[in-house]
Length: 169
Image 1 (cartoon, rainbow, N blue to C red):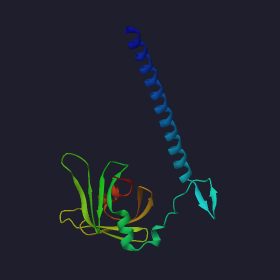
Image 2 (cartoon, helix red, strand yellow):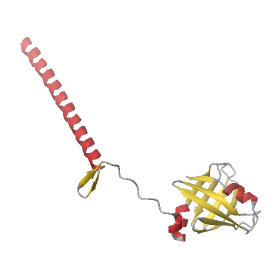
Image 3 (cartoon, one colour):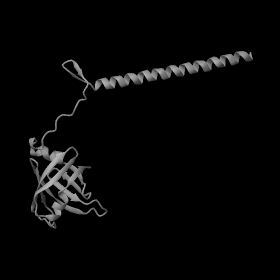
Image 4 (cartoon, rainbow, N blue to C red):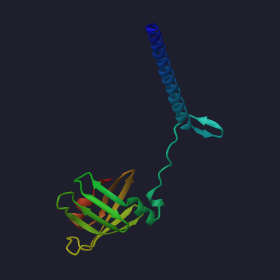
């Protein structure tokens, strides 16, 4: 009887190995099939012909082609300056510029007006050095970066912070 147990035990080991091997082969085939389907779905079909070139994004819309409301929406958000880490937040018609430190130093706050590729910053703080003198800047938007170039701004505090390249936070 002892011999029978040993033989049946060997058969179970062989069956376990075969089942394990079959599972591995099936998983490999499934992974290959999924990879094939994903790569095929990336091909573009034009006039019933498969084109092997990757699908490119739509051409960028020029900022001048957008309405003033759409231009504001493009600039809405928080931006950080590459120069000194200042934070510019534009929300609707309002803006704030702050230095990122423990005290949260406010540089300026006010209103913005966007028209074509120009933006006008008007400080509304009573204790601001710039009072209500507007600063006019040209902006260049490139993906997640915006660069402001001074056109006319007599407030050196504001222009020293705004005239820079900013990235979206």
